[in-house]
Image 1 (spheres, rainbow, N blue to C red):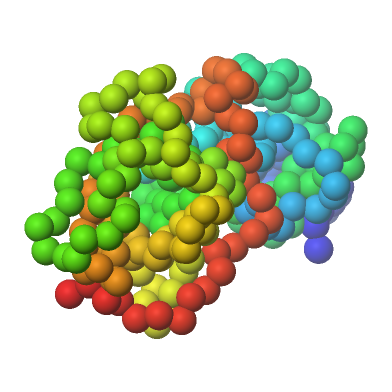
Image 2 (spheres, helix red, strand yellow):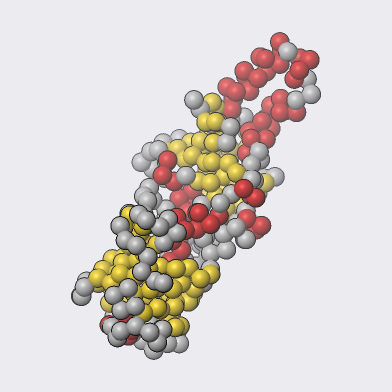
Length: 301
């Protein structure tokens, strides 16, 4: 059962009147207005469980954040997967400031402006932030930074990782493997559901690229290998391509093409940091979804 901080405080104060000798030194109750602040700072970061969101509206900055941190009036967020776990010592970037009151919080976001939200405690490490204007609730799970599984968040959201660069340039093709049409494609770009590809020469500036093909793409989990992700490119003008997807580092991925047994390596160009401008965040909002599951086994040896 969720408890609004105001109600929790009332119960605590009532108990303190009966058991003063036990609670008299409890700083949580000494200053009622700071009880919400104590709760917000009880964990280093709060994971925004976007799949648990309730309501048809939205609070813009919550839709972009993987985690939020409330540190002495400053609001931090991990909005990008590139660098997650390292940026800001794991807390992410400074995106605004906040003031906490009794069971409520006022957030002034650098891009999206001011929000007033009610704060509820669902359990010892789960908060609900409720925006009455949009009638929408967001649920946050609290962690200490040294116990948070950044790798899981990264691999569970690889489609967003692919969207964090304006383009991916092919920088390597293995000598092994049969010739196939994908050999000619040197650039890829990913948005919410669509991808584009280009056969322009390597080294072409992103602004000069001519996108020759487009279609839908999908990142999959696999039924028999929790560490394996796969990628399909559904061209509108030809048949689909299927790849095993491997992340080398924050800016490099490998695509293994099982049908030709060819390995391709792509490097990200034009990093999109979701920071001070909402314009470059188009298409990146997280949605209530999970990766579909493909029943395949790893082909790459």
